[in-house]
Length: 177
Image 1 (spheres, one colour):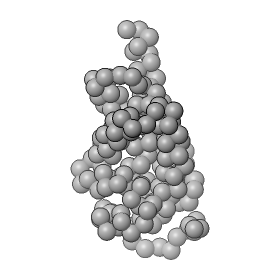
Image 2 (tube, rainbow, N blue to C red):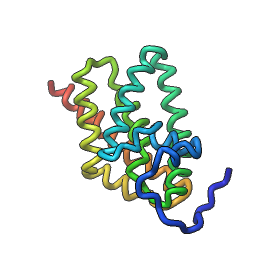
Image 3 (cartoon, rainbow, N blue to C red):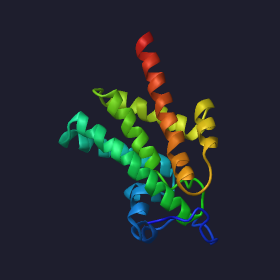
């Protein structure tokens, strides 16, 4: 399916509904299977959903298989974010949370094995980097804008940089501790 680079103008959907989410598979994925519909802090809700989903994946899949799931989720998420943002006519809607999901999966996957408190610290650090967007995260957030594939990648890219910053802080802390 080809998505036009300049979709016809229509009013943006400010807050997507369950009906919108279920109207296309890309919407369901991009909205984090409903976690992005949270009226309060959808990015945090999406990251919490990612954490829960990762714990479930760990009980069924090997670390190598989880790595393949993450790789596939990046590609599928790029497509889903591109389609959903285009249909919403919003460059980077807060309700699109698949970027948080896959980025936090990367953090947890590379951090494991670690207990609950280690995961919680990773969660808190990731949320700070994603929400506040200091330095390199702000740079990444400004790098790719627009509709189409470039914009879809931009939605994901800043969260990948937030994941990298999270892992860097944890690595520095582990080095000095």
